[in-house]
Length: 147
Image 1 (cartoon, rainbow, N blue to C red):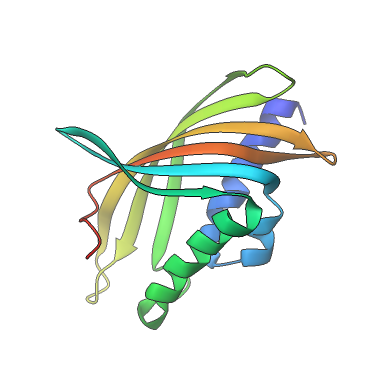
Image 2 (image 1 turned 180 degrees about the vertical axis):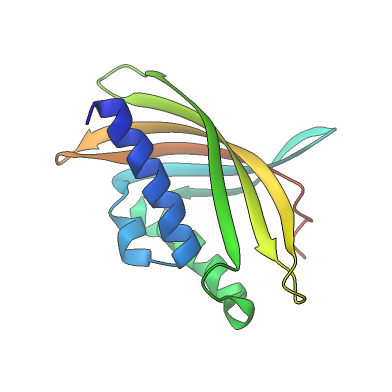
């Protein structure tokens, strides 16, 4: 596969790891010194809601979100769909990949609903022979503020 194809495959694996709650797979997809910033977007602009630095911190934030919903989670209860991926060189041998995502879930009545949508602006770096996430900015839309 070309480097871009490898990055797109890794992006899909990252979403698969989140949806299946596979922390070990998730850990393998980030550089040790990665950074992730999450914003909530809307008509009044965007607001930063989370920032994590380093693989352990980034994966820890995701795993903590799993713990908050453990009582209602089961395989398939939340699915990330990735679309419209645009890639370009990012300098220093890295690849920038911008993509859209929709977040689907099931209600208690087994009805599929669009929970929200978002954008990812990623920088991928070749690390020990694997393309890994070095930096991600996520903007989510449609999610209510956490209380």
